[in-house]
Each structure stands twice: as structure tokens, then as C-alpha cells.
Length: 136
Image (cartoon, rainbow, N blue to C red; front, top):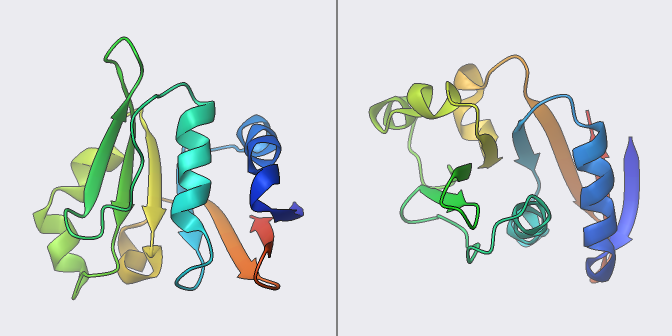
């Protein structure tokens, strides 16, 4: 499935992605500045959280909850990891074993740790305002 979009169309794109995804574990592949965090922000909002979404670059993981306090999602940014051992040390297996949504930026840093049921999302920059999203 492919979509070409501008940022203003993200809410509709995310609705379609949620309806058609076969996993709650999503791995986002894209170059720096392509809009991974912006897309994740739209996912979190559409799924019902009012939390402020930001890239967890320094903390490595952010948690988002529903209004009632129930855990909704974990958002990882593996960009700063030196190796997969660091992901294991932070307890990635425990996070992945939950029933929460999992959003992973820079999953190529932990390739052997990614579960088999992951939904891969690739974002390609077409121009300054336009992106192409491929889900596989």
C-alpha cells in the first residue's frame, strides 16, 4: 500500500493505516527530516491520546496514554544507539511483549531484535512538502 501526501493530509492517511495494519508494532524507515515523528504524532492523536508527542532521541523511549490513564503506546528513537546490546539493556524485549502500540524510529539500528509481526513503514521525501509512504 502506498500513499503520496502533504502534512495536512496526515490525519486521513493515519486513519487508513490504522484500518489496514496487521500489527500494532510499527517500524518507521526514513531519512532525517522526512517526518517520522510528525507521522507518529498523528497516529497517537488518532488513537485517542492527548499527550504531547516528541521524538525520544535522548531518552530513547516515550510513553503515551489515553485520557483515562491507560497506556496506549511506546515511542522509540534508536538513532543514538551504538549497538543492539544497548536496546537489550533498556529492556526492549519487555516493551515488545506488551499489547501496546509500538512506534520505532531508526529500527535499522536493532534489526535482529525487531519482531516478525512488525509493520514496516517507509517514508520517502519527494520534495520539500510531499512525501511518499509505503507500508509493507
